[in-house]
Image (tube, rainbow, N blue to C red; front, side, top):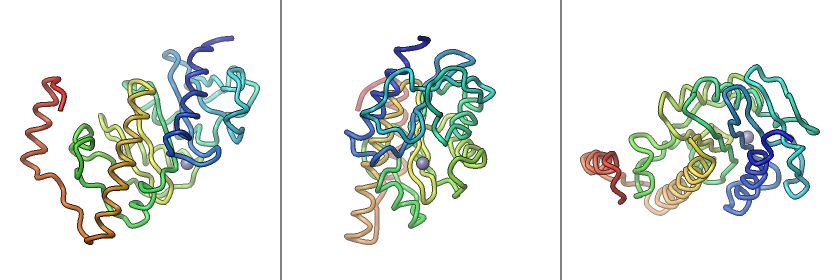
Length: 215
Ligand SMILES: [Zn+2]
């Protein structure tokens, strides 16, 4: 079987989304690039505990399933559009995380209000306009929201999406954005205000991070 290790990573990533409380049921999807013309993507509507590596579709950059015993995620057009637009991206994680979704329904942009969000400055996860799930238009909206080096977006009335050079980086990004969204939501509830870290401090810390120093 081709790319068994990467297909196994897709399955592990699905369980990880559940464990980290980023999704419910089989919602959410993951893709990982295998080479310049192939990527693995989570399949559609199969309970994660039933997944085996041969069920993880391998798809080419024209969108053809080249190997699999199961159908690819209905969000295949979105993954394809992002992977085509961002050659630097090796992995995409899409979740239906609760607090990120709430912010998008409130049309409330996530400010840099916590330290982990600094890693994704200057705009950690802009809200992108609603498009139908499974549509190429949704992929185009996400690509526009990510820009050339963005790592995450919040999809209006839908959920969260993060990209990265590895599964670990994209998953960690989802966790931190969701944590920031939860904190921002409770601040809004408690005081109707979410104070951002001052801009000059954000810039200073971005400088520090660019030198490779940890915070
Ligand atoms: Zn979705």
